[in-house]
Image (tube, rainbow, N blue to C red):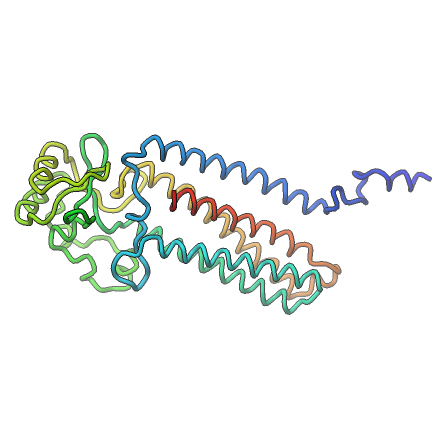
Length: 317
């Protein structure tokens, strides 16, 4: 009689509340709290984005590069990163599905592909960070703390083009991937405390001008006068203190949000590797179920879903 009473208690330890194991429930609770954390970050980004809407960097002007391709390819590389992560979620679904069917070899195959996809995403994000940090166009800081950029007519150009410096002339793989600092030769004329050289170059090249932070294009003469009155120094690349692309908060949010998400992806890859080792050893076959694969699958789908929101809010809006 006492045994039957215990079975009627859903929290007695033998039953599965809501039809799920305690392990799954704890994973869902963790994901809910993590979702609130990411929501807070994205909400803060949204408030800052619309507070400085007139001077906020345009993602299509910032994320324009693709490995081994020259020219501007706005958001193409970020779209590829997103595709890779979404496909890794598909392979994780297949791994969980074959886990339910107790097909060990298929679970190994699809989990391995998920790990490869996650690792590719991390490598792509590292490349993007490197390119973002070292920059490509350069920016001129002004007294109102906003950044203006060199243009050619109504097309965004770069300080390098204006100053006749070929940034890719030092043809090494490190430089190509944006991981090599400017050499002394490239810094000639880039006195960060004085922009007179920049103004002189504008005089010599009337086809160049300045685009203000509110996306207004000035004429060449207006550009010279504007820099003479407002320019303070030149920014090359981005960090937590200065940002060649525009408002410094943009770089702060970029590093924090994508970095926090990247940490989740890295953690997921590590956990996937540990679970894969257990699958290969036959641990879950001995238990008679692959619930651990399903639980790590929930985490991986969450990480992918969060990136969809980051991609939408940070890159598209």
